[in-house]
Image (tube, rainbow, N blue to C red; front, side, top):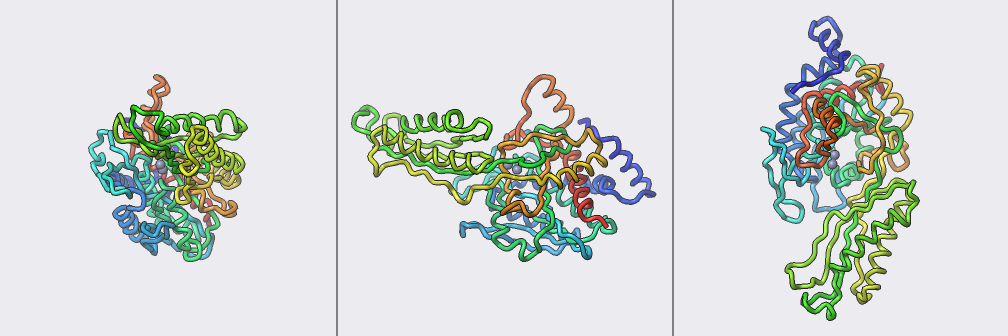
Length: 447
Ligand SMILES: [Zn+2]
Ligand SMILES: [Zn+2]
């Protein structure tokens, strides 16, 4: 596979190899790359579901210790006392100076991998409902872990260029939106210091490897998760006049929910209402008593969020009334408190500062300014409650440049994050993640 590196990066690597130049993030990334790709492949073939990241966390702890960090394991407190927290905190001290938080996530997803890679996951595990599910690193958190370990190694070797304390955070359960909150609830900032800056990163499935992608200001949406049970009165499928059918009612409710976006909301304030799961019934000729649905709702503004959540409840209940469902069988609409995360805000001043550093070191053409998305990211929690801690969560491309070019030419969509076919090209992706994160930390902590 042909991989394009920015020419400035290649030159600096050559100098490092010659032994005359000072070590740089680039030269260290090059030297560490084969070991980090081996770690990446190991994690990729051993993915773990959210809140079950035991093996992954132990590996991260071992590597942070080897890089010279003081490491705390099993850190975090979930709202749900049944869940074990596998947070890993590694503190790297280097004299007086600012504290900077650097975070990776650790968890994988219930997806059956279809990449055909030699190191593809064959893992299945029990989910929290006790059901066997396939598991895959379909969001690239394994790439983040490899780049995070590489960043720790690089900053350990570059201690003459920075001062202060780096708090490396291996965060569980990003995909549930509850991992960052679990670490903060356990006293992350009381115990390890409130950071002056927080830095996170995520791979991107529509940007070429070697490139950074960044958005100034709001970059990912508020995420709310809802459970809805539409109740009816079940009976024989041949006697609709004797029952109240929750399946037909659910269909009406789902369609009516889409009018929240199209008919109730200011079109300039984005809202997404997605029903991702619907289950009801057991057999063709039985009308069930209830239908269960799971929703994700994405918004930016508080007013849009309040409006969407209230409208989901109102529409479900009033359509049930219209269908003649008795009041005691009204739909139950629950906004979950455990799977929620606020919108991510990239501090504009910090974003501008990092863009300048990356452009200087990676080249202007390798830093892309991208639009915000309705995706969710619980990295937002680290700067809350009021964005008082300047934070930036940046992206780095994960796609083979040749495949990017082909996709642009043919118009064929590339596999997105969470796709069973998402396969980041490891070397340039991890390398760019290390360089960008190390450069960012050096900029904020330079002597
Ligand atoms: Zn994800
Ligand atoms: Zn992710």
